[in-house]
Image 1 (cartoon, rainbow, N blue to C red):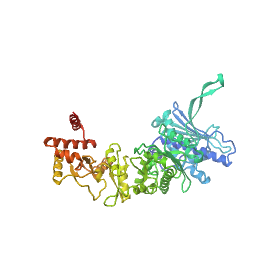
Image 2: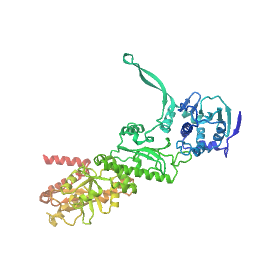
Image 3: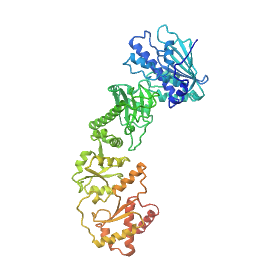
Image 4: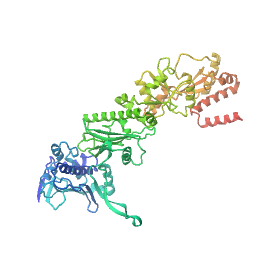
Length: 621
């Protein structure tokens, strides 16, 4: 038996590893399995190069849980280690064999271990660690390394016939949760589901048909439980995959989700290595940024689902996988480090997304338009968030009108520029944020020859302001923000049917009705006789401010709910019926018109609504 000391700088290295190196205890399993994958990948490389003379045989990894013995074993059939290599690699913390291996086999991108500290994560959960190993090299002897979490270790001779390494963790009290099969299942699914070597964890029972004809019967059979998919879709050539293959992989990632709209297959090897698949999910006109829907891998090893460093927030609406060995990680691989490659990768993904959207738009505009309810959220969010994307988005950013027609912005401006330009030469885009609630105003606007676009997504308030900022020649006005006659400010005005004295009388009637209603501005306007007798409109600026305050949780104080009450002096019911009514009847008629206007804006509620309904029934009687 041989004894010695591990080469460390301090006696306190193990407590540091245990408590500070990794954010989560559970990371130990990823690190140890990643090392086992490395050892197996190296063996495959030796076999391919002809250095390994024997048959490679079964190279599956195996995870063995023994709850009774309180052990967890990670077994590989890779290159193993000689005694000299054990002393060299296990006893010098932060010295990784991967660096030497990569120097020798520079073109091999499958070696994922970069930190010698990875192996020592085992001591976060184990009171004792045994490494039983047999090298692939001729005449190598099996050897055992044992350490109890202190700088002391033992080297022993053992019996071991199969090439490879068994790492046996004697789980301590702090790590007892990892003696649960369900917990190990959970971690294997999280960290190892796409590793490139099959991983066995226990067995499973399957049903199998045997025999033929009348002798055919179903038998149950125990088979290895392989927990991972060693050849995921993103590692394959796009030419090998069909649409159903991409959808099947999406379902593997996100079971029970609706089928995605389409995907982008990422595959680049210069100036950095990057593969992956990003999916456009069905958003259903909602705006939900789910930061854990894109997963980052490094050579098929799960790293994180917090990808804000490489994926801009607006791209987190996408789902999928990004895999790159060139993304710089900290020593525990738990977070990304700032690096020029990260910025390049971000730019590349943004460009690929923009190019894909442009390609889909040009290839089949009708199909693109049919998906706009989902795509619009994404494109508008990107347009507001990323200047480079915004430049490209002009080629496929659509405006949809209430008649379900779609236009590129420049085409729409060209369509309305003659009929919807105000006295300041600004082109006015009239929009609705609720097609059903604003049906009357929309119909009235269309009768005047105006076109109305639909802006009914929760981000459209921001989007409108961004467009106005970037395009100084256009301005948006909501269809209920003014009377139809005044949606587009012009110098000309219709002739009034009321005299100045009659105007003052009508105004006085409504001022008396609204004096207890808060900040209400009364206007008497000579509108079209077909326009409503009384309308309530909210100033565009004030309404936008209140909506922005509500969306962003801004505290601007109590902004008054002010509105304009616009009385149509040219409507027959105002010019004749209201003015000719006498005494109490005149006040009741004015109140009825006012309540109709409130009702149309959903502002008549509670007792006021009940009273209005009862009075209306009395009028019918």
